[in-house]
Length: 407
Ligand SMILES: [Zn+2]
Image 1 (cartoon, protein in one colour):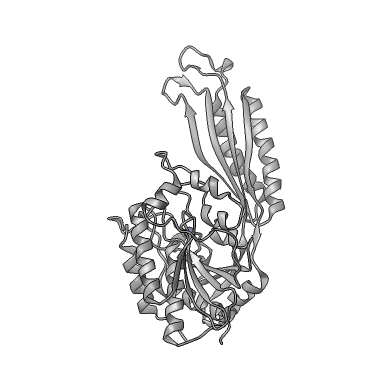
Image 2 (image 1 turned 90 degrees about the vertical axis):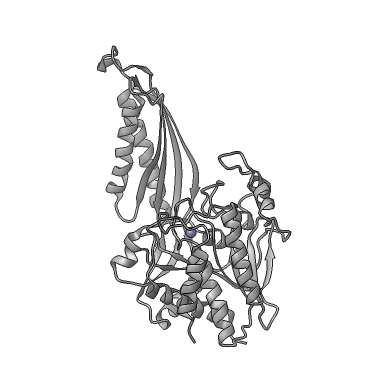
C-alpha cells in the first residue's frame, strides 16, 4: 500500500499558492487573511475526505476519520501559518502529508481500529504572537487560555480578536485530549540529512532550549571630547559577550549551539558612546545538563566582559525548556516504518521547537524529518525534493497505520 505521490505534489502546489510571494516563498502569517484562506482550503479538503471537523477555543482544527472502535485517535499534525517571507514546506508539509495518509487509507479501503485525526495548530511560529507554539501549549496545560487570548501582535491586536475575525474561534475546549500517538512530519531545517544523503530522519526528541536577555548599562557620552581611558562603552562590552557566547559553543563542542540574535543599541547614533545595549542569547543542546553547563559559562562570560569595561548589567534567564525525549515505542515504530518505506534514514534530534514538544507532554509522540536543501528554512529558498517527501509521507503512512491498527 502506497501513498499517491502525484496527488500529494498537486496539493503541495495548490496550498502553496495561498500567500505565495513573488519569489516563490510564502507569507501566511498566523490569523491573517492568508492564514484564513489556508485554513479554509484545508477544511474543505477534510470535508471532501468525510472527516469530522472540529475547531477548538484556540482555533486548532481537527479532522477525524472514524475507527472501528471508540478508542483515542492517532493524530497527525503540524501548522499552515508561516513566518513572513518564509517557505512552502515548514509546517504545511506535515499537514499535507497527513491529509495524503488519510486519502491513501481511503484509496485502499482500510478501516483502522483507532480513529486517525489530522490536526492543524494555531500560531506555531510565534512570528506574530508570542510565545511560539502557543496553541499546543494551551492544549498541554502549559499556557493559560486567558494569557494566550491576550497575546498581542506588534499593532496591539489581540489573538482572540483575530481568531474571531477570521472565523476560527471554536467552541471545543482546548485541553489535553487522549491520543494513541501524535506524529508530526516536518522539514529538518538543518543540513544533516542532505549532507548524509538521507531522505528521512527518525526524530528521537527535541533539544533543550534556554533564552536569556542581557542589558548592559554603560555611560553615554560624546564620541569626540571623551578620551578612551575614561570610557564605559556598553557596546564594547556587548561585543565581547557576542564573541564569548560563540566561544562557549567552541569550548563545549558537541551539538551545542549558541546565538546572539538581537542587539539593541542606545542611543544608536554616530557620535555618542553607547550608553545602553540590550541583547538576546539563545542556547540549545540535546542534553539538558550540557545546556545548564553552558548557561553557567554564560554568567562568567558576561561578568568578565562587563567588569573589563567597567559597566553594570542585568542578565535574565527567562525561559528554559529541558530536552523533550519522544516516546521510545513511537520512535521505534517510525524507524520501522522508514525501513519498510525503503527510505535511507537515521535517528536525529530536532534543534527547533515544534508543536510535538507540547504534545509529548500529553501522550506518546514522535516526529519524522525530511531534508531541507542547504539546511535552509524560514526563507523563500526553503525546498525539499519530491523523492524525499514521498519517502517521508510513506513513512508517516506506515507508522500511522501501524499505531492505529487494522480492524
Ligand atoms: Zn514548523
